[in-house]
Image 1: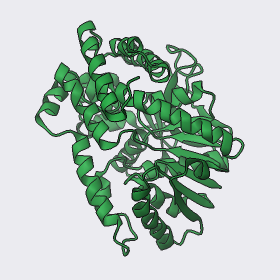
Image 2: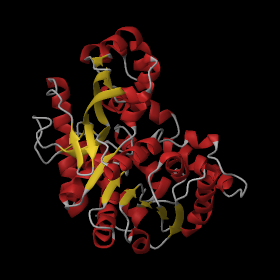
Image 3: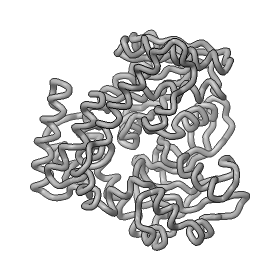
Length: 416
């Protein structure tokens, strides 16, 4: 099996390669990136990681997209259009309007979607022409829900992947003192807007016990008030903090450097480390880069798609009736059983009115965001921002629309 990683020049790629080296089912792994200088550092380091683990697969790298995609069975897309400079912009310009600055939600998330979706669709269309018949596109590019919906709308065989669920699975497994593989989550919602409504171990839902015994620790983990976990009877994703504690987050963000600035510093240090020809293990600093457990999630998902093992993964798929308050063509992030034919959502109860209302609101925004990213136009951008619950006011949407378009134009030399 050939796995192509688009965005292989990312400083996070060694984490992914380490996961493949430990248990990845591949014969060839090819890293694709237009930044040949970064590939010249990351490619040899990734090859040393494979050698250390004794994995027999081949690893190559190229800045030629078509060559890398040719005959690929799996195409992993993990790119960042505009780099960390664009991320820093996404995390800062909304603050001037009193809105949360974040790269996956709100105005910053829409700015990223506008830059990213056209590029991802171009890559997927090339893959459709050049990759092996029936090849899967695995999207780990934020905002994952919007990117996945754009891919599915364009007719691609695609599934979206996020590391939020696997991180929570690992955390609760530790609290319960069981192996992570024994824990099945009722993970439900949208990408970066999700809740765990059950934590099943051996056929028994352990979530009530967890909330009774560890609610403080769980609340601290997701950076939310304990009362929210108690009232909803769930473990929310930490991204819910941007919704439930919006003004508090804005105050914090205005007083501290953006996460993108810290990641840019980490990346410079990592690239210097990777250039050491004696280094053949991922450095501890990589753990600060973000994306915890992504390699495990990606390798597990690819193994299920290729091997038809019917394992459970939390992924982004068409709704198709899973959540009755959403349209069938919406994209949801839920626990699914995954095999060669794709991901099938596990049965899940309808959302309660508080959760359903927020999910419906954001899902409507995501539909408009895809339209804006695919077709462009100021009115589409404005309408998407007006629909977002973290914006939702005429004057704010007007200001943010102009700032978003100006910021993206500065990074890409064009404005959609």
